[in-house]
Amino acid sequence: IDQRVDSYESDVFFYPIARKYLYSDFENGVQVGGRIEYVRAFALVAFLIVLIASINFMNLATARSSARAREIGVRKTIGASRGSLAAQFMGESLLKAAIAFVIAIGIVGLLMSSFNELTGKAVTLGSFLAEVPLFLAIAIGTGLLAGTYPAIYLSAFSVTGVFRKQSAASGKGSGLRKGLVVTQFAMSIILIVGTLTVYRQLDYIQTKDLGIERDNVVMVRLEGAIRTQYETFKRELLQVDGIAAVSTSNVNPLQIGNDTIGVEWEGKDPSNNTLFWNGAVGYDFTETLGIQLTQGRDFSPEFATDTTNYVINWRAAEAMGMDNPIGQQITFWEVPGTIVGVMEDFHMGSMYFPIRPVIFRHRPDTGGSMYVRVEGGKTRQALEGLERLYAQFNPEYLLNIRFMDDEFDESYRNETVLGTLSNIFALVAVFIACLGLFGLASFTAERRGKEIGIGKVMGASVPHVALLLSREFLLLVGAAFVIAAPIAYLVMDDWLADFAYRVEMGMGVLLAAGVATMVIAWATVSYQSIRCALMDPVATLRSE
Image (cartoon, rainbow, N blue to C red):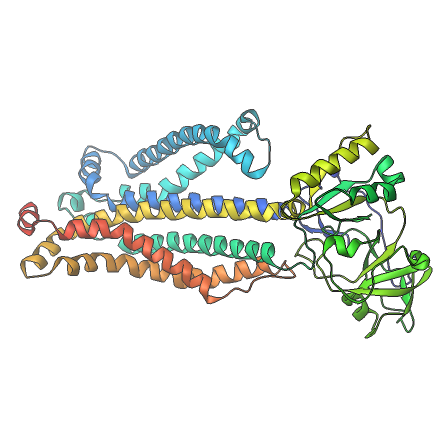
């Protein structure tokens, strides 16, 4: 390469095959990403969910501190130090984390088959249990994370304050609790925005016109007699009911593989190193794949010179500065020829990449695969005829059929799994956050019982009381949205930037996530608010 192209500098290096699956993206020979990015993303999401659950524990432990205030006072009176009390509370947190760890192991065992089905993996319970020490360390870390603040907070109660009933129930620490609630819901909103964005992008990919009609196209590998007697096989195959068109190609149009700079044309700038995607195709290729010809013609057996002619797309014509490419002379891999057809631009490979300049050449023996277009509604008859003829021509080979639309879906399997897992994680995060909100709402209703009782005696209606209790939490969710919206926008816009063709981040997704979270939070708090508003004020004031 260095000898043929002065402006290119190439280097050959070894790369561990064990790293290929996770670290497969390169730019100028430097590894810049790959599937490892998804692993890191889900590790971060898992951490956020654990953090949300830990915040719940901290909030509820401190909010309910009045229930243990007398115990703390008695222990301190008989000589317990602050350190011993903190150790006790930390031990309780670690014990709860250990119990949760055992339950989690059982749940994972039950869900293992569903996980493997979703991800297409074969993770065994044995391989999972081999990582138990790591998971145990995570459980211990979670217990420490969740228990540290409550241990410090509860052990700090003074004996005099406890017996004078001046504890956390009087409102001490409420500012921090509110901050933690805001943090919880901010993280939940970010996850919801991420889930909605992934689904929008997947829907865009799956519905966008690729310029190729991938439905009802069967791919069969060319091998054995099918390859050496292809023209005979094709003629007989076209007689089968339900077979509309047949062609061949040495490249898969859904995968970018053959890039070259070996194209010359009149007036080319010597510094122009445009990469052209190229392939050798058989007759009727554009018809078989539904690629539109906008000028000229496809390769045809009526023209013996087509082995040195070329069909290009408009992106290639633009790269060569040709407004009217038909009849223009180019040289491809030192073989001069004429452009006889121009195709509408179509997508090759992933939406991560822009449409490439394309050059097709004709070869009688292309190798690669045969493409068979099946008429809609006649798939069964067509496949039965294909299987019969294949067994007749190739008795020593097994017919391996692949559908082009399945190949397309498989190329976005990572994104599909990402969308599904994001949905699950977002639901889990919101559910955990709402559990904490429900507990805090119950505590708040209990703490403000006297205020509510007096208000009802003074004539406050049930809706007014319910709104009074709900408003505080809804304002916290609103604050969470204000914090989360710009973060979610920046994170997901950065993810979308990897796609050459993408949806745009707009206020609609952010508002949808905010409204959904607000409605869920309102529904969570409403039960406690309405229950408290319906209580008999006389009974409430008597208990106070």
